[in-house]
Image (cartoon, rainbow, N blue to C red; front, side):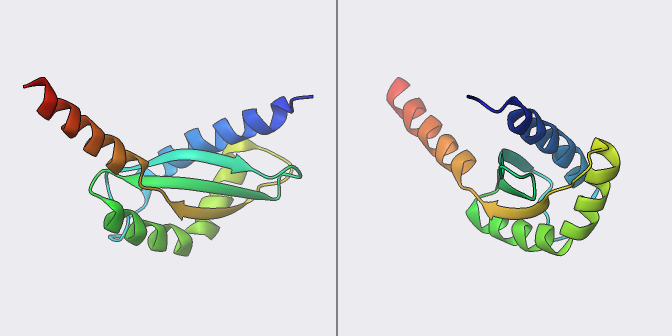
Length: 113
C-alpha cells in the first residue's frame, strides 16, 4: 500500500527548502543550487536532501558544507512553515545529476551540427 503522506511531505520539504536556500547568506552556498530530490524516512524523523549546483560538482560539495552548518536554522524554519508535528532532521548529499545532464545535452548538440 503506497504511503501518500511521505510523498506529500517530501514534496513540501523540497518546495520549502528551495525557497529557504535562496535566503541563506552563506558564501559557500551556490546561488545556482537546486534541490533535486528529498527522501523522507518512514517515521518522518530524517529527510535526505539531494542537491546539485549548475556550476559543477565542486560547487555542490562546497554548498553541502554550508548547508550542513545551516541545517539547524533550516530545520527550525521548515517546522514553522510546514506546521507539522515532527520536523525531520536534514541530511544533505551532493548530487551531480545536473552536471551530467548538461554534459549529455552538449554531446547531443555536437551531433546535431
